[in-house]
Length: 193
Image (cartoon, rainbow, N blue to C red; front, side):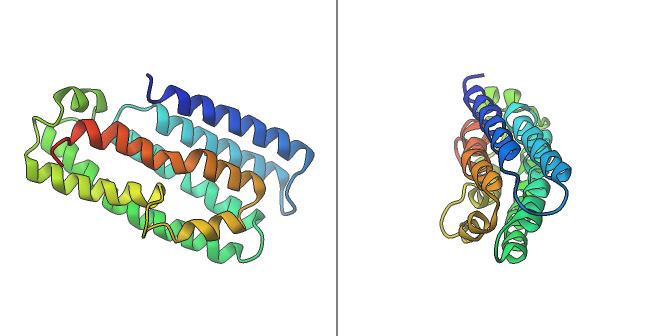
């Protein structure tokens, strides 16, 4: 649809350009095959995040990108790469736990995890208090990934330590996933939150 299509095209284009760049200038480090595989897994998770229309599948795809990005930073990054990778994974995982609770709250209280049905219902099946709690929980997890102040302190370290390809994909695609979650889930599903 109109929300997902530009982000799907952006993801495919940036990943292609990163692959082309990597062909000519592979970052120093172990196993070039593993590097390319991680970039492709990262692309798959990002494309899935922008394509799925189910809250739980969205969460799984949203989290799927953390693992390859962690290894891209930790194995092929620059100075302080281990510390930056750990900071990245800890911040995003802690935000994700809270986000999962909010997604489960919406799904269990409304009786469906289908984003289209939830958006069509426009929050009518959820009380205002449930919507507020869900917005706070999901919003916290998405704010870490967006990144919003004051939950953004992982980002400068991750960008500085990441290899060029990792930094491009982080800035060009991964940071858009949080904002996409706000627009795709929170605005239509919990308008009173």
